Amino acid sequence: MTAHSNNKPPYSAGFRDRVFDTDPFALALWYPATAPETPVRHMGVASMAARNAPFAAGGPFPLVMISHGSEGHRFVHFWLAEYLARRGYIVAAPQHAGDNYIDAADARSLTIIERRPQEMRQALDLLLTHDAIAPQIDSGKITALGHSAGGATVLKLGGWHFDASAWRQYCQVNSETDRVICEYVPDDAALNRLENVHGAPVVAARDDRISAIITIAPAFGVAATPAGVEQLKVPVLFIEADTDEVLLHDVNAARFRDLLHGRAKFVRVKGAGHYSFLPPCTDYIAQNFPHLCRDFGRERPHIHDSVKQLVHHFLRGLHPG
Image 1 (cartoon, rainbow, N blue to C red):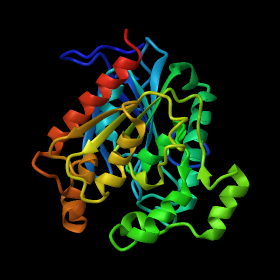
Image 2 (image 1 turned 90 degrees about the vertical axis):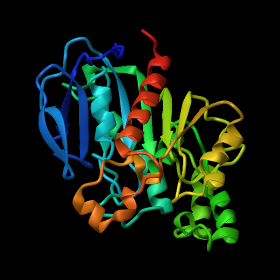
Image 3 (image 1 turned 90 degrees about the horizontal axis):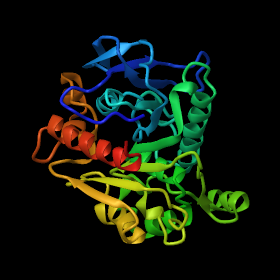
């Protein structure tokens, strides 16, 4: 069941980290609880949650799977996960191997583009077979949400066929002006391998258990083609940064807008930059990684409030009642 929003959320935010005894990757979980929240810290940022609390009665609950951005971590969207947990959603966030803040060896490469959806699928497999967690999940109401590279990840789970040859063709012309996207463009051997696996130089990763997609400032729109989006048929919400200083708008979010022709909902968040969807900055991050703290006209908590409302409204529209 999904609780309607009101002045006081119906639940507290339960929180568990490293959910599985043997982690293929670290996974954090937020969920509806009734135990009191106490202070917690996620990568140095203070918040409130009921650590290791029992699930609230009233399930099963819808599930939101989160894929973080390149070189991120499983706590990046804790501010959204807690908000949703208090309103009747389970939120699960795996930390992607080879593309996180500790190990970024494969970031923005074809390897991680293939691996990320597999990890999301594996995380979902584990959750849906977990003795204590699986009964709490409404398996007919599973949404995948992602930011940046995570946005591309969840679009693949929704049915987008990522065209690696289109990526390379774009970079043959734009490698100097779009180094973020073109730094690790695939070579002939990589394209041939995809051709052998899929019958075309594409990455296909549709998971039929995913019933909706939310993508925030998605990357790799350069790999989107008319044929590649034909199977993207689930409801999709695109949340765009008003000023994306990292990804060129015309070939990322706007590329999907042009190809989908009204088949998805697009909303631009005023005052947001690419990193505005990350947590509020600590002094350490501001001093050492100032680019992660840049917003464009609004305070980050206000930007987060807009995103929370957009996501919750979209989710409630999927499954009213």
